[in-house]
Length: 429
Image (cartoon, rainbow, N blue to C red):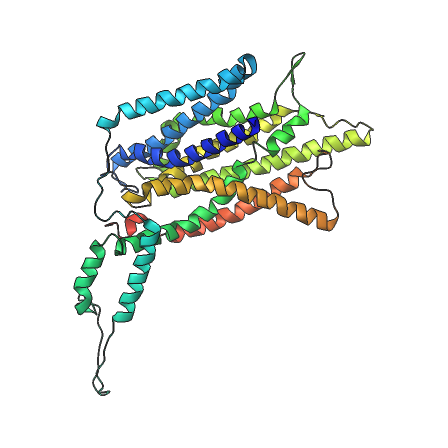
């Protein structure tokens, strides 16, 4: 019975986070005003407000996460799980009350007639209507072959008799061309979304294999205290909290001098830098793991059966810190990118696309592990993820992630070169 209640509570938490995370973040960014569109021109300094919003939003999320793994963990271990769960529950209730209290002063989007209530059905109807227009739009050429007919580009449509129906269709929220344009937006974002999946796969490693690495390393501090391997994950959060303010104070001024652009670097360049840092983090993780395996093999050859090697767990800190720095670039850049590259009425869906990268990335990570298991078992070699950490080959898995991420980065750079930005396309919907 207790396990059923626990499972139900976990499902409710997942459902709640999936509901309010995209909506609340998009709603918060909308409070800065609809006149500030992303992306913006080089001379428009007001666009930096939304960039700062996404940065400090992530700063707040990481601060809360740090409190959770430190203060709340201490309370749960010292005073029990009841108080440990009661404090977050009370905090959420207070936050809802405070959020509701600000309702009179919030900025709300106006619901115009072009906003659809059933987007999937309407997009299908828009595609159907477009196909029908193509079939009914005919061009009749004269039968006299001697007469030369020249078709020139002009503002006058080829089907003038259908012009009024086109106008009516564009005003129809169930079949307007703006719905087809919305579908095109999603298709346009899909390649970039796909290339970011490998970053999300790397994002899964600190809570899994990095922790498994740390369990076999020297964790003693002083006489009797041992560092829990999972606590090193707080290094990611701490690096974000400590280095996030330096991004605007140091990094952006330097890039402004180098690139001679008002914003220093574009959003897509920001995401690319983070992907490069994540690849470097995986290379460092592979090198540290190779060193750990070398020491472990020497100990096994000497007759020792212990899996713990005399290598300090702090050797893992560089890969944790680099992943934290990469989050400052890529995660914040993803929030700004997916928010700014969609129409106003699709911004919640844009933020949902950003969060879905990590959800799908976790499944891709599980798929990769399964494929590696199938490969190693078919070759009759020890599994890369076997329980004996002296026989395991996490270094090979890290190298695989580094190579796959490099390929993904190269394809991402190619897509960025030809990516049709929102500012270059029609934004009148």
